[in-house]
Image (cartoon, rainbow, N blue to C red; front, side, top):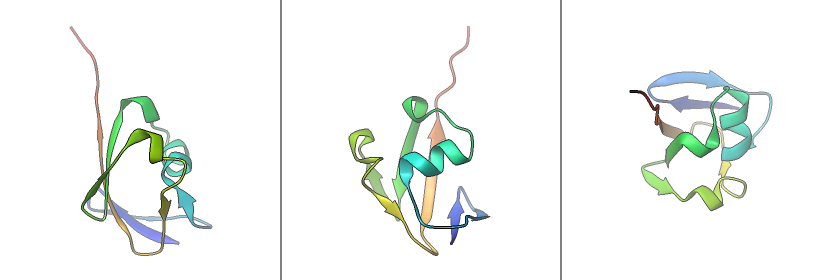
Length: 66
């Protein structure tokens, strides 16, 4: 399965839900906002929403600092 994340092409062995995809690329799901095919996805839907071949995602990770 191939998809586009933040403009870059990624390849995965199979379709993943958003929660699995976030984990696969090493991000913390509690610090990420996800837009899937131009639709904002609620965090409680991450384990349900499936990313399919050729889907587009935008991920925004919040980083604290001070």
